[in-house]
Amino acid sequence: MEYTYLFGYPNVRRSIDISESLKDMQTGEKYQVNYRGKYRPLPVIEVPIELPVYRIENIRTKSLQKQWLALHKELPRDLFVNDPFSIESQEAQHQILKLLVDKENLFKTFKENDKLQQTDPLICSSDGIIVNGNRRLCAWRELYYNNRTKYAHFQTVRVAVLPDSDPQGMYDLEVSLQIHSDMKAEYVWHAIAADYQEKFDLGIDINVLADKQNKKPEEIHTYIECYNYAAQYLESIGHPDEWMLVDKQWEAFKKIIAGRRSLINPGDKELFQEVTKAILQTPVVGDRLYNQIPKVVSHLAVIAPKLQEVFGIAIQEESDDDLALLIGGDTNGEKTTSAQIAEGLRAADDPVLIVQTVKAVLDTADALENEKRKKNYVFDLVMRAATLLTNAVSNLDDSMSKDGVGKQIENIEGACAALKDWIK
Image 1: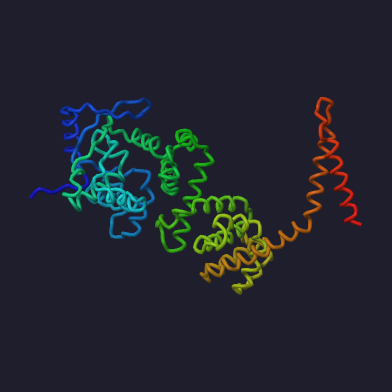
Image 2: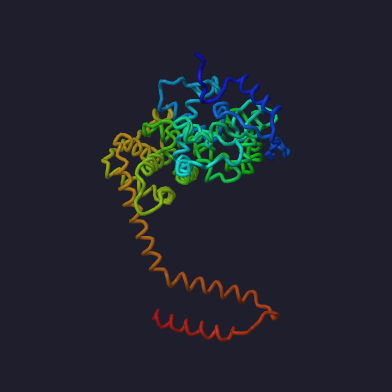
């Protein structure tokens, strides 16, 4: 009995069928794209919906592939690497793409208008790897396979065929067509970060990568740092590689990385990490999540003893004897205290109480700052006015207009008289 292929014909068959379709094409339809440095009119053909394969290297699904393996431990760890065109890897990729299709309401779009036809062609390599349009193909397959009569118009799909199957060319095309066009709307941050991390692991120079992506090297580094920190965070909360849990926390991770960079003491970094982990798990009510994080950095010295008090963490005084020094014992008491508080927080495992305690400290600090601003309000304005007047005097020039200046001076003199009476 012949096997029914749903997620891509075998490699040789794909190549042969596409080649023959190109020879026999009747319409002469072309689709213009910039591929490998030049604009090319790609021939457009119609193929069975079962023929193409998903591009496993798709940047959009890099982190989600890790999540899929984390949630399906029975699958081989090299599922997406060993043979990307195998039936198993293509079926898994289809399920991953379904997550995105559901999330972006593509199913709803085509279900609500079951007569909606394909407009732009998909783009595939010469051997049938879909470079652009993986989500659309997934949605159409899902609809067609579940109701072949109602969605008979998806029995075949139109594809614009590239002249080759060059991996770097396909990668660059994906970047130019999708990421650069609208990165925030199209790609979740950790998918982009996973790609940068992969390229870095392969030894690709960050400066070269940044140049190709039209980014600064520091931006690439930030993505990689955030990705690694997020991976540690997911591991620490018992959900390794479940990347959808941090879809909306890009701004928070950027603030965390910036905060960690500003801290010098390793113990402070450790404590900061425990506090921000709790904030990520229990967003603070009444303020955006990432707005709390810089405040934690600036008030960590006040937050630390309060957390110690609330959680009843006993601090062990470190020894400063010669033996401790000899074996490399830490003689920085502040560092040790912060590290011990961090350890106590990990043992307590109560993110809600951590957040409540931190929020109380920050609310008190904000109230004190507001009171201070209120007390210094008049002084701050008078000092600002004095600075402006001094600048005006030091830049006097006969060519400048004098119209209205006298009237303003009278106003200033009146205000100064009122202030003098007030301070008596």
